[in-house]
Image (cartoon, rainbow, N blue to C red; front, side, top):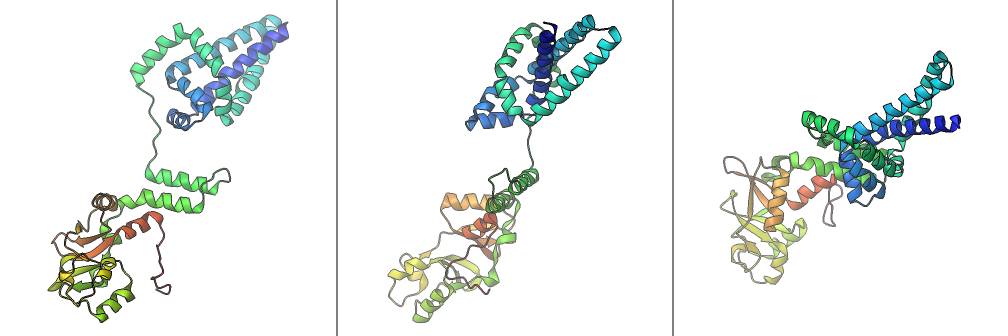
Length: 321
């Protein structure tokens, strides 16, 4: 009978000690997120972790109480000095080291399995644990959520990609890194400088030579200027030129020439420009500097390439460039 009592006390000590370490290695926000995604183990543990100080007080109180009873009981069975060494050795190895090592590695599994036991302990120790937890809550405030910076998230993503236990691949790592970085980049860093932009005068006639140039360049949109290349007056849409058969000027076309276009500044951030493009349904924006001089263009494709961290090529791109 004595061995059974000792075994039960050691088991209880192991549970309290292991759960104390194991449950508090599980971040409350992570558990909430996993539970929302359908993880049943996290859903069973989250209600326990939600009341951190009361859970902590209950587990520590239970652990101290059981270890004290175990030491006293062994003292009644053995000589005082021997009982002290035996109790210390048993509690240290079987009540602390082994359960904490196991629970810390499998916290979600054991925490979920032991959740009914923890609920019972919370109920039993409530008269003592709740007042202590209440004071701790008032003194220390709510448990701080674990938040990560963008650089930390990028590092975590890289660690996942390198791990055989993760399903994140190289392409996903590259895209996620791009998505986390592109909002810090400005239009100036991504735009095509004005000297490299193909554009036409608004009085340019739709001649055979003009169509050859448009076909050769292969762009879907072209800037249109008036007088000089800094005076942009509209956008020419290549697809709408198909319906134009007469030898007329660009500004005389019925649908191909659009004077309402998006303007952005060189210092604007890419995420803001992307929002504008999506809201206004614009695929291209003309870039101006602080002095209102046209300095280039930026396209939706340019921004997407920054997110994908990869150049988007089509059949018109020159592979040798």
